[in-house]
Image (tube, helix red, strand yellow):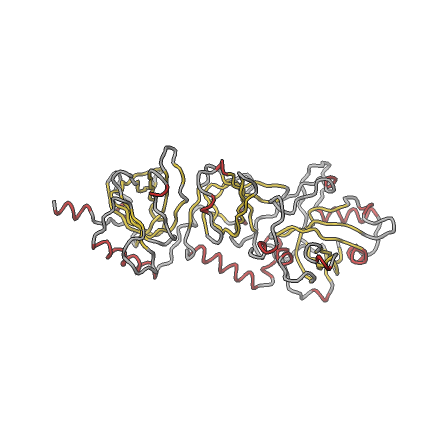
Length: 463
């Protein structure tokens, strides 16, 4: 009996457990990913996590835990904490081994991670029994993980710059904001530091007055104090979440956390990327000190500090010579449209690399008022945002180099908007990147921020 008890409560290394199919084992490891609690296909609640130890830390081992209700599942404080599971059965699915927790005879305990001091669990199941030797393993894991850089999140994951319309993907990203759209729908604002690919734009410019191209996926623009929390480089992807389409609590998706979305669908709305979470989507939390995440944040710091790296990835090494700016602006640092939207002052001047994706009016014959003054509203976009800007009066004269003939101006304007000679109103457009100067101003000093507008200036069309 004594020998049985020693073996029964001996922890098996994860590398060995990986080969111990259909055996009951005891495991202890560092949590590197964990899902949100959700309902199983039956009446139980379910939580999946991935753990590593010194024997098996490249991909880690999945542990699937079931309980009668959500409260009995592990309430993990942070990825990187330690979990001890006893009497779990090793199974295999699609050639990958995993540990199956049985609510009737398995048990678990959670301990603080590498910065913890107490060897007492901060949560444990009702049938858990701690033994003195457990503390030795907890301390040993804490010492081991201090000198190890872990990452299990890169497998099959893509960056925002690798998105493909209509595809599902696994994406590791940071949640910057969560807002309610309606009673049943929420929207997540996520980011990984890279630029989502530029999309072709619907070419029905005749609809721009009655049905203008949207500036954002969400129904209403976010307040400036929220936008100021977003990074000014890299795409902030909007992700739609409808309560009836997911089986986890949206409230578990906390601002500031890094997560991994598995099987997220990518759609396009009016030339804007939008992610969609479905019942097939899984959400996993990953530690902020994961190698992959540290690399993303380091890349962001480098990009944020570099003038050239603030240009859209798609415009490298430099945009086509569609426009040129005044010599005084040649050495002005580049800004993104998010820089403009979140700038601390109402009036300012910027230099950006953008695309013209829409305009009003849509015919060059209508660009000037009856008195001969240019008055055009264009929609500009870069990977960070879309804005309306105006080509007006003297600034527009500089842009168009005076008053060219209608045929000449039509040709140039089509090139700027990416309009091809394909005889189809539905032909998508791929506008070129251009460099331009943009100034902000207000129409009403007593209501400066609400009346803030943007105008292109000191820029000349040279195609």
